[in-house]
Image (cartoon, rainbow, N blue to C red; front, side, top):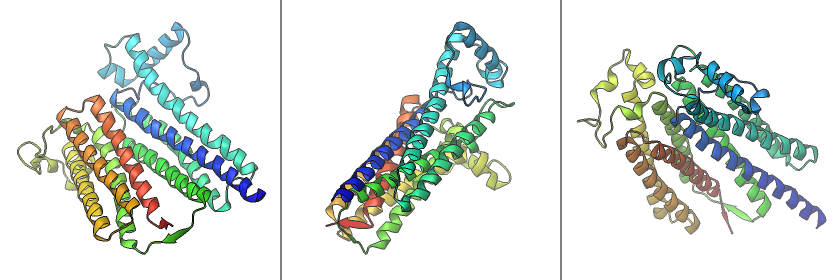
Length: 350
C-alpha cells in the first residue's frame, strides 16, 4: 500500500507540473500574438541571453536603448515620429514576451532535473520530456532568428519564420497537453476498455493536423498583412475566388508570397474545419458513441462556430487588435478541445 500511495504522489506532482507548463505556454501564445499585433517585436534589437533579463532602470538606460533602436529600419522607415514614451510601450511588450519565454524554459527544466534525480518520471515518458525540452530550446533560438529577419533592410519579420514560430508554439503546447492527459490517466488508475471505432479516431487526428495547418496559414496571413486586402465575406470583392490570387509568376509562388492567396487559403481551411467538425458531430450520433464523447463534440462544434464568427468579425473590422487577439486565442481553445476529445477516444472508462 505504501508503494502504491507513494507512486500516486509522484505522478500527482508531475501532473500538476505539466498543467503549469501548459498554462504558461498557453499564455505565451497570447502574449506573442499581442506583441505581433502591437508591432512591438522589433523594439529590442539585441539578444542578450543573461543580461537581457534585466530591464532598463534609469532614464539613461532608456535613452541608450532608444538610440540603438533608431539605427534600424523600423524606426527610420515607420516609427521615426515616436518619442521615448512610445518606445517604452513597444519595448515592454517585447520584453514581457522574451522574459515569459525564459520563464517557460526554467519552469520546465528545473522540475525536470529534480524529477529525474528523484526518479519520479515513469520510464516510458522520459523520452517525451527530452523531446519537449529540445523543442523549447529550439523555439527560443528560432524566435531570435525570426526577429533578426526584421532587422535588415525590410522592417518586418519573415512571414515564413513567423508562421513556423507560431506553429511550433502550438506543437509544444499540444505535446505538453497530450502528456498531461496521459499522466492523468496514469494517476486516476481507471479500468478501461479499448473502443473499436478506429475511423472516428483517424478523423479526429486529421482534424488536429488541419488545425495546425490552419494555424500556420494564420501566421502567413499575419506576416503578409493579408487580413487587409479583402475585408468582405463570404465573397472576396465581387467573387468567391479572387482573380488576383494568381498575379505572381510562377503560379506556385502565390501560395508563399501573395497576400490575396494567403487570405483565400485561410478562409478555405477555416471552412474545411467547420465542415469536418460538422461531420464529426453527425458521426458521433450515427454511431451512437458514448455520451461523454458526444458532449465533448458538442463543445467542439460550438467553439468552431464561435471561431468562424470571430474570424469574419476580425476581417470585416480590418483586423482590429482586440478581435484579432481573441481570434488567435480561440484557435488555441479549439486546439485544446480537439486534443481533449482525441485523448478520450482510444479508451472508454468503465
